[in-house]
Amino acid sequence: MSKYEVLKSETVFRGRVFDVLREELRYPDGRDVQLDIVALSGAVAIVPVDEEGRIVMVRQYRHGTGGEFLEIPAGTLEEDESPEVCAGRELREEAGLAPGKLIELGKIYPAPGFSTERITLFLADGLTEDAAEPDEDEVFSVERITVAEVFAMIERGEIEDAKTIVGMMLAKPYLDVQ
Image (cartoon, rainbow, N blue to C red):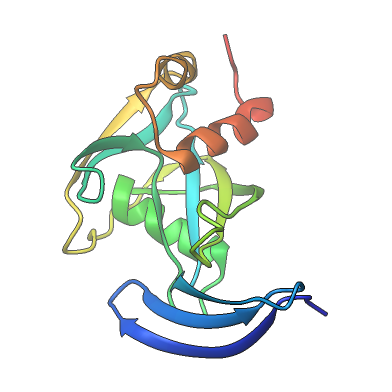
C-alpha cells in the first residue's frame, strides 16, 4: 500500500494524445499537496536494424522543442493494443518497414515527475518493406545511419531524444559496434 494517499483526482483537460489530471495527495508526513499529471496510454520505441546493420531513424519536427530531432521510430499505444502490435504498426507508419523479429529491451518512464507515460523499447530486425500511411500530423524523413555514427552523434550531443539514447544503450549488446 502506498504511503501517498490520493485525496481527490479530476480530469482538467482531455486532449487527442493525453489528458491532464489534477490530484490532491497526502504525503506520509501529513502534508497535502496538489499535482498536475499528464496521463498517457503508454508508448513504444523501436531500434530498427536493417540488413546492412544500420539503424533506421526518423527526422521530424518536435514543436515542444522548436526544432527537428533525429530519433528512433516511436508512437503511442492505441486502446487495448499490445506494445508488440504497436511497435509493428509504428514501424510501418514511420519507416515503411515491418519487423521480422522484435526483442523487448526494457521499459522506461521518460518524465516520472509529471507523466504516467511508460515506453516499451524494442529492437527490430529482419525488416521487410511494408509501408503504411503516417498519422496526419507527422512529417518526417527516414535516414539509415551506421551504429558507430549513431553513438558518435549521441556523444557529440547531436541526438538529444531520451528514448533514442536509452534504446541505443539497451540495444548495444545486440549491435555490431565498431
